[in-house]
Length: 302
Image 1 (cartoon, rainbow, N blue to C red):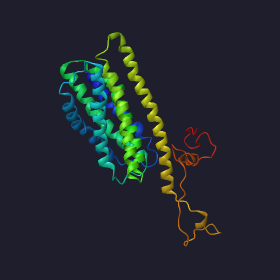
Image 2 (image 1 turned 180 degrees about the vertical axis):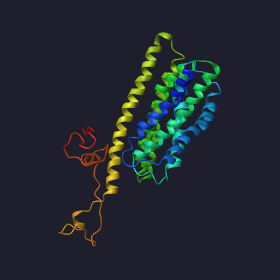
Image 3 (image 1 turned 120 degrees about the vertical axis):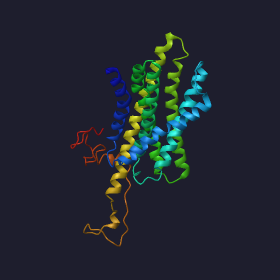
């Protein structure tokens, strides 16, 4: 019984904790829960077409015997298929969503889909191990610390570019940004899977190096995702403040400081780095231009 409870916790907890981790970083205008739950459900649903495509390309029993097969299976079968399917689901569902109002929303949407995908995939892998008696606890532990975070981080990277593309006017720029998001997500996903698949074809004395490469991939991807989250937060702060507090130019003001109705209203667009020095990117409260810490929440502004 304790083992069963541990397995259930390892199946559910990683996805829930990672979702909360990125949800609390949506500082300005959090998305409605019905939308997020729908995206999580779509992530679960996206496992079906991804599995059909993967089976069509690699067969029902995918057996890696060479490094070439590991590379093809990792990048072209698993990475390209799964990330493209996830992108299609999130793009079609959110491209006209009225709640898509800042760049960080793109990250939140793709993380929700990615974790929905990882959650159902986790159930299938661990459930299959339980049925066949092949070390379900070990598989649950391994996936809790590797596969599930990998799907979440792939979502962050793809969502960053999805958020950027959503606010671009040029269709060519939109296409380029979305393509970049898919490409980088596929590269990280494929590199992770390549190390995982290679474990089955290399000599035992090289397994340690392969495991080290797998965790190195996760560390690099985590650092990349962390930086993209910060950039998206700063850009979202700019979008939120300018939307909430329109600023008039000097020409639109009378000498008494009041608005002149005869003059047009003009919003001043600030660069994100300039704006983030005026407001804390974590709590949104005003800060001194040269402040190192926010007086309201204590967050570092360096």
